[in-house]
Length: 307
Image (tube, rainbow, N blue to C red; front, side):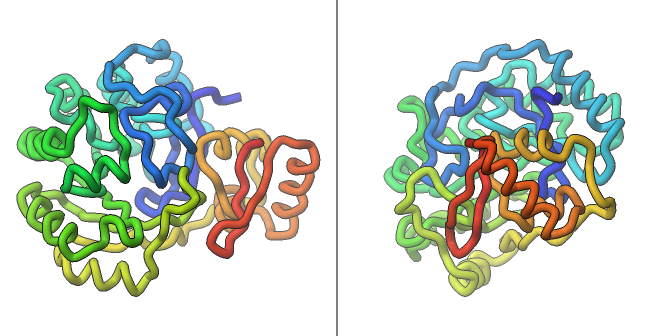
């Protein structure tokens, strides 16, 4: 049973992503209103060595050897990965062991630190967030640690771009009637023009958020904002890939490991496993009856998560 690695999961940004969870559950520098994992229990900014990094490295390599359809090995999971002070070692060793590109999904809060940027230099793509550039909007959406402010985050992004030769895909999570105003978008456009990122990826709430009142934008809303922001803005499209095999080893355990870290729709699960609609529905029903998972409606979809 994998302890630190999960998936591959269907990612709209990274295809089939083999997730690597290097942080204890909900140990983060933010407590975002839209987070699909739930409320942050430890709002921290101090980096630590949480787990023996070589145990994680061995698990990544072992899982990669046994798994097909991996587009990226992605450091993300249950908290902010840059809080792990062994991140650089893990990226370095994984890069030496496999040709699969390495991605890091980060909220960007610690990019102003020299050691964090150094740890990230060997990654193939870094996916930081910038949901707002006004301090009040930033604090409303991301609810950061008290010592983190938006100017520090913007500085960190600029320093990263100056030092890092790989790809930077900047994500903006757009919340209805919060950071989608013309005033906020004008400020965002100005800052993004200074960051020289490879992609500006526009997203909105598509999975059950931390705060139920967090509103999502329509596709039409996103298209108008994308047009206004111009290049390199793009809307994160739906996940289209699927596997070509009938099943995967230990189907139930694999799905439960993923559901610990993110909710999935039935369609997501079919794409991960490659099994039929009816078979997936039947197996999920068994897991629900056993009390291992639960389901609920959000935005006209049924989502599954670990009980």
